[in-house]
Image (cartoon, rainbow, N blue to C red):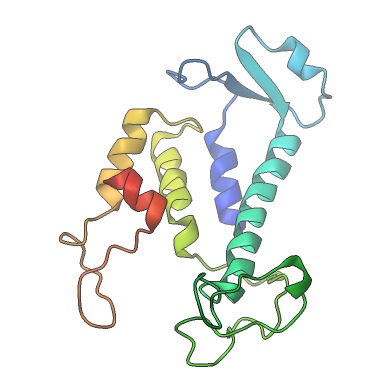
Length: 193
């Protein structure tokens, strides 16, 4: 996990609640790391108090889990898509630890990440790479950084999507055939539309 992402998120959280927290969402205040869980009892009405060390651990767990899930999933991505043929029968739990099968684009070659279906882990000092499955989360991280607040309003999220996501007609990105491609997939494309 890139520690800069964790540091950025921690710097966004202050002892003061956001200027206008979304309705029905408690504002967050961070108690000093030395304070115990009793801090949640001392928080003003409508606020949730958690320790900085607890918050840091939870943020690190989120980003680490996201990275491990994304990169482990890339090993088998597009290997099994349903239907007839070799790519039709989906993987099962018993396939874990077994050989990775080629993806529909793999020309008979298993994933470059791993020849077996297993966890993909990066150890320090290496950094996790980005992947299209976390692009939206990185947009939210940038928006939180710009607003200096950990909670985003619906308007901020909408503006962020419109600023950072393109239609196929607007994008400068091209696929291998030179056609425009915005790299949005299924649910994110549906939300954008």
